[in-house]
Image (cartoon, rainbow, N blue to C red):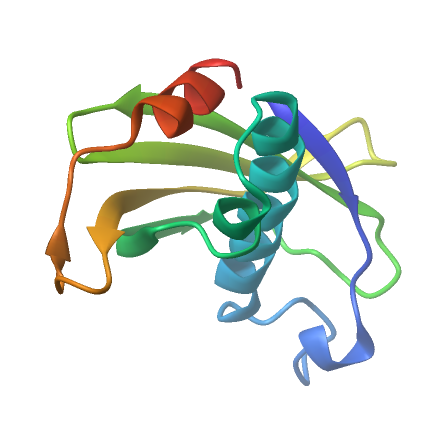
Length: 135
């Protein structure tokens, strides 16, 4: 799994002083962008497909395990769980990085390769598949 330190913002917290449940999907999205850019550049993916990959998120799941309170340093871990013909799954772990990696949340998203001009799903392009296999 790839790991990225996460800087929380004041607006991420709710009135109870912990990260609001809705924000975790934003953290997952941020990790997807970071990891895709890193892996795609190593894999020779075009800059157009790095900046705007032909993907849609078809499903998202979050399991909240423990609170992330104000001032706690977090990290997001991301990895590829499964690659299919038209889609693949990312798995995530958010940990309190200065507290022995206490698990805060975990989740999964399913991405589907999508041809926006045709308005339909498509097989994952070979170069994208190779980049994902390298994660």
